[in-house]
Length: 127
Image (tube, rainbow, N blue to C red; front, side):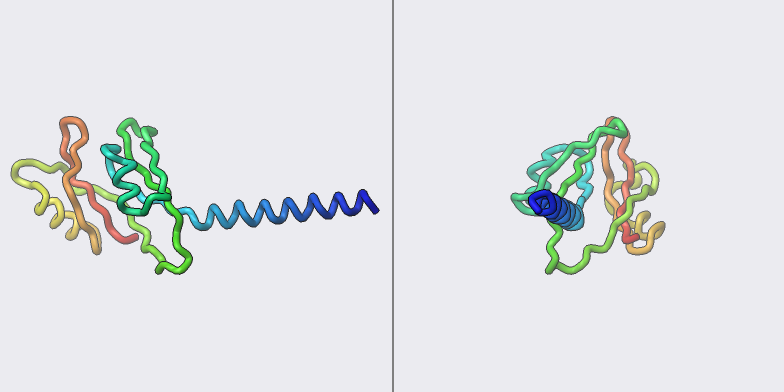
């Protein structure tokens, strides 16, 4: 009987652990915030003090990723995709970049993002 009680206890612990892990994974959202400048401050300002940031340098350039708790009562967040619309220059700056993104991607918006010596037109649009 003691052996059966121990087995039931272990199985119950595994079930509880699995449900907590799955619940935690389901409630964590991510938000790409561009370059890593003031990453943690921008993350906390946008998603609250419990959010956590990470500067991801896996592609060479440091990009800020913000992890935060998705609210179950909050409306579903529409997924956003990233794209590009060329290079920003003296002839095509912020407003021009935004217009190019709007023409290229349905619902798109753009901004000039300087990476080193290049200024790229970066677009964000609903997937």
